[in-house]
Image 1 (cartoon, rainbow, N blue to C red):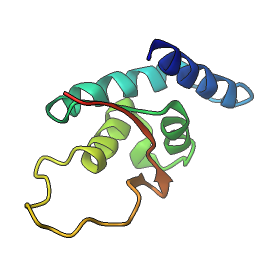
Image 2: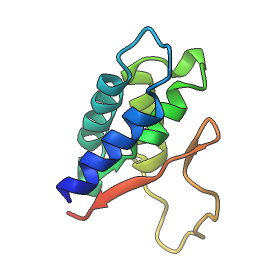
Image 3: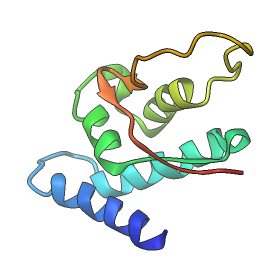
Length: 109
């Protein structure tokens, strides 16, 4: 599991290696991942992959430029406060923020 988390973070760092941003992208990704874990604690451990976090940030959407904004958007999609009612039809739409599919590492409770 540790190897998976480390390789995910490393892949995101390599993916963004040529990015000329004013923020420390690896630190931004790590902060988002840690806060999503906290925000989704009731659903088990859910960690958004580094590539998804980076892609959301790189959308350059002014509403998705701080750690808190990105975390809020991801938590709203992955762990809404009110899960669908029992028997509700499952959606076939991928979980996405700004068109970016949120791939996650999920560790059940």
